[in-house]
Amino acid sequence: MARAYSAVYKSTLAQVSAPEAPFIMLEIDHPDLVEPIRIINDNQDLTSNGELYIGCPFRCVLPDDFENQLPKARLAVDNIGRELMYWIETTSGGNGSTVKFMQVMRSRPDQIEWEIVMSLYNVNVNMQEVAGELGFENLFSKPAINVQYRPTTCPSIF
Image (cartoon, rainbow, N blue to C red; front, side, top):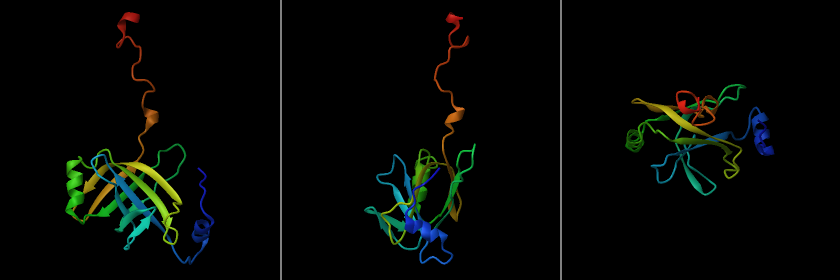
């Protein structure tokens, strides 16, 4: 899939010793949250498009882009607060959550260079980190219609 990156972003990616590196911002959203959790993979906060992203280092494997395969990603955040654990426990492991990845340059925080929204599932928690898998629902494995006319569902027409 072709993406329309800005010239500054392309130039930064092409340089060996670039003056700045792109940052990944996350928005974790769930129907039970009043507003999404917003974090940036840095030790400093950043305001982008009027929203404050809290600096919180995390580890992520960005979604791959292979043919004939649904993209998958992995996310791990340090287990640093009771609020996060309380939310995970009350939402059955974050069931129904979505995570939006966005990539920006610190010098141009309002210019979103790349973004993708994925569903969060398989959340695992231990003393050090909260980790989960990200992906898309496989719509190709679902039937196209809810009711099918078969002898078991509609015996009167057979």
